[in-house]
Length: 578
Image 1 (cartoon, one colour):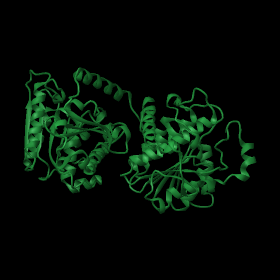
Image 2 (cartoon, helix red, strand yellow):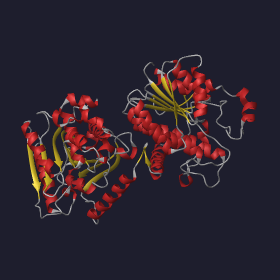
Image 3 (cartoon, one colour):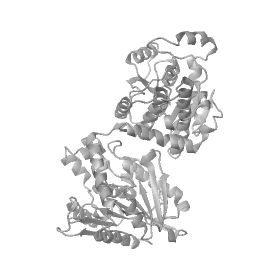
Image 4 (tube, helix red, strand yellow):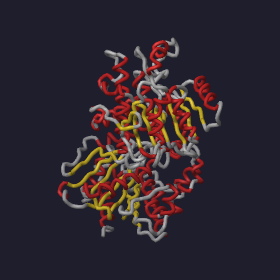
């Protein structure tokens, strides 16, 4: 276990402290997540008293979304990978209390807080990482009150606590499903009746006498923590995920805790609760980004007003392709009259400056591409500033892995895959094409693109391609900093896109518009590709007088020039099919 890093929540007492002790005894570096600096420091000093351990005391209030956001950001600055996450902290109260964000406190801390913490850390967890949720047998009497999640009506402690513990088990089930192909295990456990401070009011001391009387029949914190420690460290459970354990053995949980439909519903519901508070994942979204998203959405809504989805299209919607909830959903469109055929595939990466856009916005455009005889994948990816480089590229790799696994099921011709992208999406397509065609460059990301998915060609619309120059030259470009996070990436080998293009790069159709503010990126990119011996076609659409023929004009289904550009893209792809 040497070299591994773990996070334990509620680490200053009871089972949390026992878990910290056991993990650190194995040589694991343990981040002690504690709400109180005083109690955390006391526990830290006690643990360090007789033995030198690798401990890091960090403060976080699981009842405060801003605190969780800041904790996650700090962890990512300090640690490259988290190998173990033990969500141990728990809260119970006889009276109804609320978190800082207005959630009923037991649900807010026990479920929402740990949900946001866990999903926020996923991008620094990987193959072999283990997530352990300390649940309770109380989940068996629980019900998720979607219509009154904060229990404003008929609150009682059993109702509140059992709801939060059922949520722990359901979260375990759904997250394990979403992470199934990532090599990350997610399990939960019932610790049994344990003598801890969970039911004691720290201000009044209420509960101490009751705990004292029952202490002889309770398990010790060490005994209660044993199953969580087992799940976090034992090789016996390395390939087990989605389980519910008691005394280090899998046991049956309640019938409703096994409902995949209920688990998925709660996951989406929790994401929405967090989003509504101005948070998404683990990052607060600045007002300027919210304002720009709203303004762009209003403009795009006007452009698409009155459009309807074509009836001649088979539409498979909201298919999960990765672990990141709403960020990792795809739609797949196919012409109805080609139901039984294996179709060439177009993967569309939407634009939006890395911070805006989704598959709903691009559905009319991508369905239109499908009408030319293609299966088209239109997908959401993780946006900035909630997520940083290279999150969209990781999601694109997940799409290619999804194609590899599901080609037969959906009639996808893996030997003829194409990509389209516009604006920032064009930059992402140009970069992912480089990853697909240059193994050394892919290795800088630690990406392994499935060999059975063959990228035959790409189309780059109204794009920007010199990202290293933009990071270097545009010091105050908040959009770039939101995505890349730091100017230090100017020296990161992963931003050397053009320099890593080889003759194996796929053929490219590159186009823009006379009134596109990125027009001057088009011809140099096409000419550069040509110098590498890559088959390239490029075109500038419209004239200076055609003011509508501007940035991403091809997404406007009412423009003849857009129709012309989209036909040209698909004709180019058809010429490459073998």
